[in-house]
Amino acid sequence: MLPLLVAAAIVMPMKQTPTKPQVMILGTYHFANPKADLIKTELDDHMSPKRQNEIAEVVALLAKYKPTKIMVERPPEDGANDRYHSYLEGKYTLAVNEIDQIGMRLAKQMGNKDIFPIDYRSDMDFDPVFAFAKEKNDQAFFSYFESAKADVEKMLNGLPTHTVRENYLTMNSPESLHQAMEFYVRLLRLNDGKSYPGADLLAGWYSRNLRIYGNMAKVVEPGDRVLVIFGQGHAPILRQLVVDGGDMELVEPNQFLKS
Image (cartoon, rainbow, N blue to C red; front, side):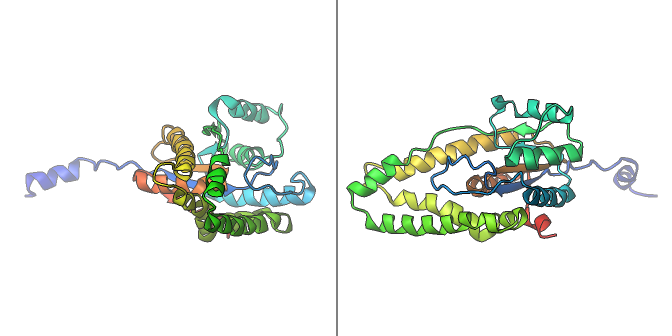
């Protein structure tokens, strides 16, 4: 005769552990090129037949992830989800930006009823940083900044000569993600023990990304496969928050884009 506890275990079904949601952070460049970032660049027309084919390739590869929720770089009040509904009804033509071209296309293909705008907008004022460095004659900072700027400009100026998939593979590589965060961390050295313009700027950058993560986390549910499409500069912080949160699993975009 089986012991009572063993018999009960056989009769009673095991409690299912909720599946930890998966989150993919896709760091992107801005197809529409609004030139709102610190370093400006020129892009070719992403509505051209060549680029449209490349975008379709990226969408097809990301579709293998089967995202159940797609989150984009627009604030909740922007109306992006309303535009998506209009797109589903055939009343909206996709604009030249990665939110529409990647996010909405893929969401429709996946049969998703909504997209999720999760951005929190805040300005970044670099003037106090550069003014402080100039006042202190911090040649080490200016030397580093010019070197970092040249590296980023080289990467951005190379975007038109590579496919959209190739650009994404580069921007979401460990090396590029490290470079994206390194500049902000270097700003912390700009202080005199009383004034901390670098730390103030970085605190503002973190504050924005913490709010973005908060907007994301509150709508993620067990079993979700989330795709977050944001400017590449956001990716390092958002990735770290997903990992450190402990209740989500980070998925690498490049494992799908390399397929």
